[in-house]
Image (cartoon, rainbow over all chains, first blue to last red):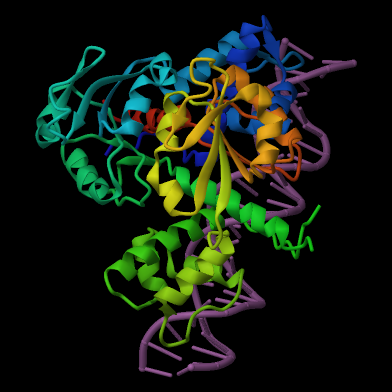
Length: 216
Length: 216
DNA sequence: ACATGTGAACTGCTTCACAGCG
DNA sequence: CGCTGTGAAGCAGTTCACATGT
């Protein structure tokens, strides 16, 4: 199923590519036209070698003795990350988190368009957010196909999350961003990312106690 | 500064500990009293060896031939993660994301108490959410000290994020959860975690285009 | 002269395989 | 006998160091 040339790119590399692109946009806004791996590394708390190695997985984008053209490299990264097109996103779950995500401007500005919202609450179904009508979660499969959805954002309660994920995937969607604090099971070939805010807090908690241990 | 016995525990291990704890709570709710590393591994899409290795970094919590006591292991993990106490959290930024986080029940139920909210918008300052008054961001340093804040959640716009982080850290807070889509610089000894929702979407975008490449 | 691109060395995480213990 | 706990092996990601190209 479409494995392409499939160099295996690590999660950390992809995360860094996203970061590099953000940094480049910052530098571009400041009028800087050329950049070395060293400067990018400093901005991202990493090493120049790491930066060059990350790029080298995809090609040669710099000029020896000179560095990288900010605008060219931005374009290249946008291409690699698939940000040179617009993605059709469905938001499943119109609760507090869902509504914050719907309004989140950073999504739209990076090409992620929330084209439909679904919820199971009869009080919400039929309402509109901006011009997007809230549809009945019961019609999930139909709506996802009608709207040609590429990516689903799951912002439903924990106990509904796996069930919803299963339906989403059965509808043919191959990318899911999950906000429910649980580990979902998805078949191979489906891209899944979790945003688990409680787990991030727990990691901070761990760091704090670990640190405290030696003090006293 | 308080490095304790300081076995270096990897980020991935800490993430998995959080997950294990959640799974244990699920199993406990289903009345299951004993569990093998194999069963935990299956729930978490990992291997039994990984599970045992993770625990072995902290001690021996199982019984050979038998497995782990669900309740004992839960308690142990809560202790390791620092979830056997309550943490005082400040929310900086009372926008849409901030308000969703304030209402997020999973935080409270895991011992993270948002004891104060700060914002710079005069229209918001003075309002109350539940019983928590929204304070003026200008008084950040005072408020964080008065309220004995352990952890700060930063939910401010990108361009304010680094400046706020600096002030937070100067106030003595040693743990920051950042929601602004940027890479913050913090001194050693300060624990920082990022929740970068756009970057997660970009990772999905990358996966989709990478997948598409071979098809056609 | 200077900064990239990259094989080689290294570090650290994961998996294996089995000895040890209940 | 079964499942844990753990050294040893294997693998992946990072860093080093330098040849390469401008």
